[in-house]
Length: 568
Image 1 (tube, rainbow, N blue to C red):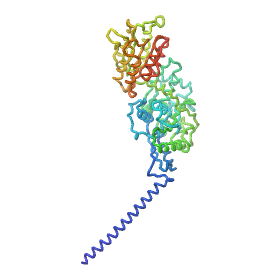
Image 2 (image 1 turned 90 degrees about the vertical axis):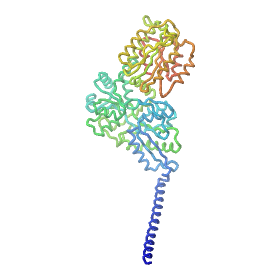
Image 3 (image 1 turned 90 degrees about the horizontal axis):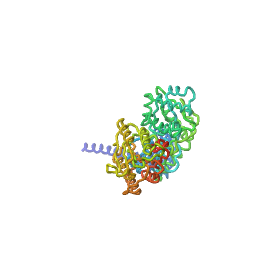
Image 4 (image 1 turned 180 degrees about the horizontal axis):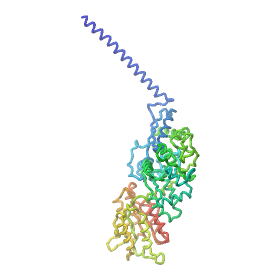
């Protein structure tokens, strides 16, 4: 029995210890829970258990500065209706976000890549900070409701001409450097002679690259006749995928590019063996302005959180944060923390965002037409009226031959081109004849097309099957659609449709049904002579998504008109 008493005593002591441990554990849990509740409520009354998540997609180079500013702002305990605001910043290429937002509404932006898939709402940010307001304008061209309210600048960085230090010294000499109009003309001449190498990040993906394309356009196209020179100049430029590829190109000997002042500072901050020099452009040269864009369709509390963060970035309290990362303030002033050297000075700049939508659009159209390989089917009107003379010794068909040959020279070797002749009731029994099948523009294909154009002759009939021939050509290009090319139908005609069986309304309806914004087929219509029905051609153009058709009245204008038509 004594042993039983000893066991009972041990059990009693163990039970007491267990009870004590349980009590202490419960007390600790209670204290921890109370402390968590205190922490959750200790943000000037906001409740961290019911946070408002504000997701921000920022251009990669500015994302670190936005993230640092967001962390400091979090210390001010911002809230929406008592709920704490939690900002999440992620780097994202401006082109990728723009393409995704366009795809959300079934639209498409050409960002030199494959078409973006329709994103889920959860994959889209609430706030977008691209490198330029140019992206906001391009997106609004697809979806006007994509961005709400104002888009104030978060920071600025001027676009500069970046050159390795020895190259900058050779081109501009020692001391202060600036790309004056005279220096720009000399530089263009040396590029044409291939004495210098120039590369840019594709302008469809990068605003600094776009600024470079616009700069060359201004320097070269001093008259309409110089458009062809610009096309070949664009083809001679190195095309890079992104900023990482640009930095690698400099390591491999690249001599010139356009990039932001901040990118030059970041490059030199990595202490390369050969630093870059930032050569300022004109005094009112293009500037990246990093707009703060709040996307449409947000929940009310998220929109309010975005509005508060936008105001915080705009009121100047985080200028030094952005300055440390190489950015100027929205007004172009360099903060005290801004690094200087090798062309980057603390002098204020004039802020000139890339905001002219028409100039951006036309430059991108020219760039795409110049550098993208094409899959094109050209239709030549061979009705009897094409034999009429526009002036002594120059027939309408002769004008078209000259235009077709001019256009052929503008297509790159990677393009695919074919020729159809059309009238009505041709000897073959149809309304159109495949003169040269679509094929890659190697020397043999160029020769076949040239010989076919030279051999073209008007037929005896003046009946014109414009509608049916155009519709058949459109289907041909659409059915063989090449996603890596510009898909186009080009029509030369001097009259109007005269064949019964299809009216204009039916053609417009058919073209609209065949149209697909994700697989666009461009239609270029060129009317020759005063007798052509331009109302009809313009109506067809609008049905295909083009702005207008083109008319040639003076034979001397054919090359310029055709260039505008082909580059539209």
